[in-house]
Amino acid sequence: MYANMSHLESFRKNVVSDGRSYSDETFEKAAKILNSSKKGVQVSGESIEKFGVLVAQLKVLKAAVQEEEVSTLFHFR
Image (tube, rainbow, N blue to C red; front, side, top):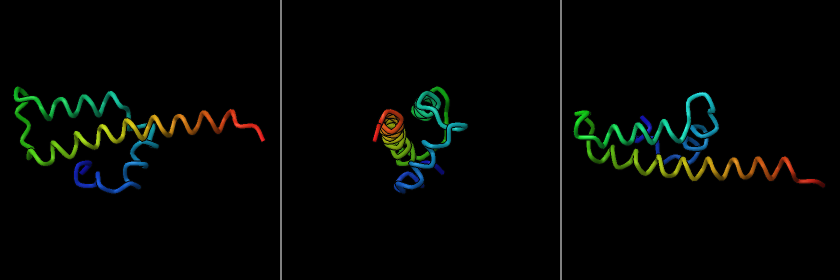
């Protein structure tokens, strides 16, 4: 599902904003499992690649969202 919807910006934003289900570490671990030949996960190479790209995009997006939240907190008018 994540790989198939990774092209949608709104999906990526919603994933990052869901603090219950998203963490950089969890998604990086999932990508590592998908890439492991020892785990024997039956997923197409294209889906694995899409998921890897998504993991990188989510990490950057999360950092940007956090930076924006911090700047909003300390922005005085």
